[in-house]
Length: 142
Image (cartoon, rainbow, N blue to C red; front, side, top):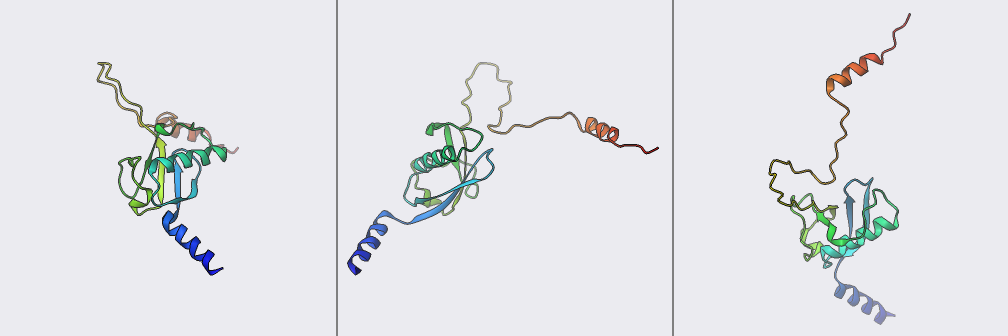
């Protein structure tokens, strides 16, 4: 019995430390949590996150193409993590997953503004229109 425990401990040490990470998908309601090996590359973590997201039936539907997504670490910086880096090398356990920004093709226009990926702003008009609508909602008493 003691021999089997030693084998299990040696096998787990050989596999590396396992950590619980949280991956928040941009636009989704909450994070996905799962256990990974510290030595696992970022690309495998993205793949696991996409599979877990689809299995749970979350919205919005993302797809399964690994190359269409990037993983960010909000604490470390704004740069996307390299797919070959080990997930445990950053020293954090919270990450953000978002779609890659579309590549801009140089069409010669040059005056178009870049659009932030995943950021949609709903416009309901100006603040003056909102203020006027809120005044019209007041019910006057007789």
